[in-house]
Amino acid sequence: MQLQPGVEFDVISAHGKPFKSAIIEITSYDGRPQKAYAPFNRFSDGGTLLFLGHLQGEVLRAKQVREMRTDIRLAGLPQENVIAPAQNRQQPGGERGYAYFGPAQAVQAGAVKVLVDPKTPEWARETVLDTGTKVAQYYEKAYQRPLREELFITVSIGSDEKPGLSMNGGAVLGQLAYHFSGSQLAGDHPKKREMLVRLVAHEMAHIWQLNTARGGVGGKDQWIHEGGAEAMALDAIQQSGVASAESVNAYRAAQTAACEKLGNSVETYNGIYACGLMRFDQLGVGIVPLWRGLIEATEAKGEPYSEQMVRDVAAAQRTATAAALGSGG
Image (cartoon, rainbow, N blue to C red; front, top):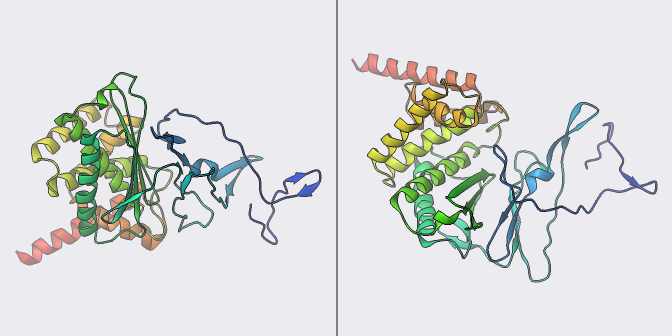
């Protein structure tokens, strides 16, 4: 609640007296909604990640959209460790990431902080750390920009009673939060490693998309963020040697087939990934120079990534390439 002279605001009161702070009791929810960050990620040792962003953002009052800026201070129960997410550098009081409450301490692994559920299978732990290290090094070199804040990676493990295998990841403001569950999580297999390699590289691509002083990911044109992350990830895992060219080509072919079944539409959840990837592949511009240009453009303009921005950057790069080839000929 920000009080600014000359700006309309609501006064929340108790017994007629205004106040500026409140205590809210939140009922836990362990569902995993599509297109949204999981509200809670549970750890097998009793720890919990709480997504603070669901307590922030925009609210609707009298059909008017208003910013809800909140100054959240964190305190744990006795003997409970608390790890706060980074502050929103673009919008003070704006959306933040996951806060951790629990018994564990994060450990330093190279340039990143890591918090791994003790129940994590060794194959998954190895894949997350190895892929994360190699892909982060590649992204920093390829996109010519180090991260603006230290990266914090968490891995939590859910129930192994449900059949199948679920691997989810979320990237937000210097954080990567992974959650794995299902009976097939146990036991190593090359196909499971391939899936996890792509997931890690995809979520880490979002970190670089967000690595701007202003602009970045917006609320529209989701195919740009997700399809772009797919294209960035496939390039990164092949170039860094984490995955073979055969594996990358097979996945790209499967996504192409999936997109064709969807009528080349990005209006569905699967379409923003599969057809988003296809749209980037069809631009005729290398994914690294393209996204380097998009990151520079969003930061310079302060505007979120958009379809028009993609077109403009791709067209400028095609023109520059043609001019370079012409002068060389």
